Amino acid sequence: MKKLKLWFLTGILFTVLACDNETPEAVPTIDLAAESITYELVSQDSKFTGTVSVKGVIKNVGGKFQSGQGQQYAALYQKPHGGQLKLLAKVDFQTLEVGESLQVSATAAWNVTTEFQPDFMLRIEYDPDILIDGNKHNDDRNPANNSLTKSGYGINDLFE
Image (cartoon, rainbow, N blue to C red; front, side, top):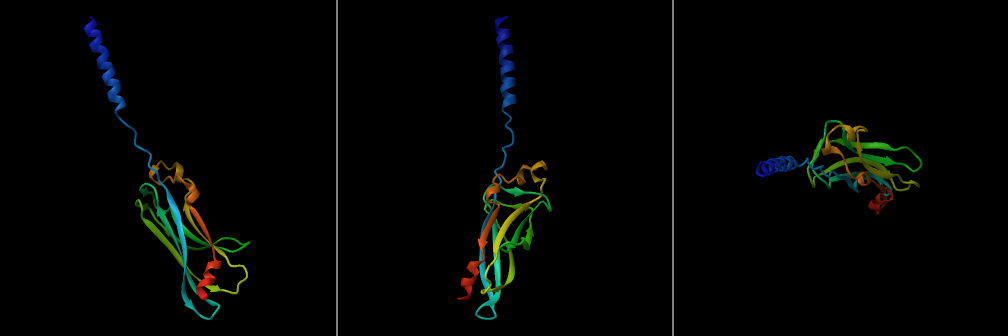
């Protein structure tokens, strides 16, 4: 009888351990970051005016990002002092591999003599329901690095 009980208990223990062997899918560490904003002089009409290119780069600094169409985009804004954001350009995307970057760019007329130069802002914009869509591969775990602002005054240096 003792051997039967021991055999029975061993079988139960084996079954419990076998069930615990199944590990849940690891939650991916998704992290897209607004990495940089750069300026480049495209053309110069005079000593004070011209056209500049503003480029923003976002980078996947986490796990592989996979999402649905229209759920996110990279946006480049002009932010006048005391004014509303003006969308200059946006790039829709669905996937971004680990380490991969995405660029969004626009051109703007520039006048060095403008007293209050605007800032430029790069932002990763997500659908408001992205965290509840059931897809763990598009849940950005670090929203603190999803936006970057750079002063436009640096553009004036391109005209010297």
